[in-house]
Amino acid sequence: MSGLDLSLVLSYVSITFLLVITPGATTAVVIRSALAGGTRGGIATAAGAAVANSTHAVAAGLGLSVLLQRLPSVLVAIRLAGAGYLLWLAVASLRRAWHPAANAIPGLELTPTRDGSAFRQGVMVNLLNPPIITFYLVLPSFLPASAGLSAFGALAAIHVGMAFIVHVVWSVSFARLRELFTRPSARRALDVGAGAALLLFAGWTVWKV
Image 1 (spheres, rainbow, N blue to C red):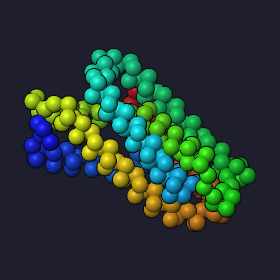
Image 2 (image 1 turned 180 degrees about the vertical axis):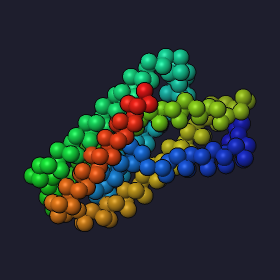
Image 3 (image 1 turned 120 degrees about the horizontal axis):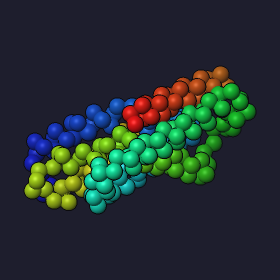
């Protein structure tokens, strides 16, 4: 990797790994999709999150990260939009918990529409995810002054790839638990838990504004 030495890369990989395995808002949405739509649903959300991560990386590479640092109000607006989206997902989960008819998963079937919706949720939750935005704001600090754009791209690709792999593991793991949630009471508990987690992340996002 041009401009990068092995010790720097190893330090970056270690820090990034700790960040991507720590459950956050994206993890909650990936797990929610895996339990509702199986492995395909979870991986579709993971793919959407990876696309959003890549978008942040490209934006940072083009210098938009500098713009966000100079205009803090833009970052505040993004944080509030992200909190609003998480709140919307939380309300949707809680509504399903209290309306059993809307909570049904007939035959546990997967459909292209559901996969498409899961993909869009992955894109949105990471595009509006303040910790991801902050990560790409500070990523250049890992680079030596002599490093070029290719070095930045290499570090960004490591993050995108590691996050995607971790989300796929979450998807596969929780999709296997899907049959445990065929009973209405179990699905209700799942939706309440997911809703509460998303409310917590939404509140944390607003508090950080």
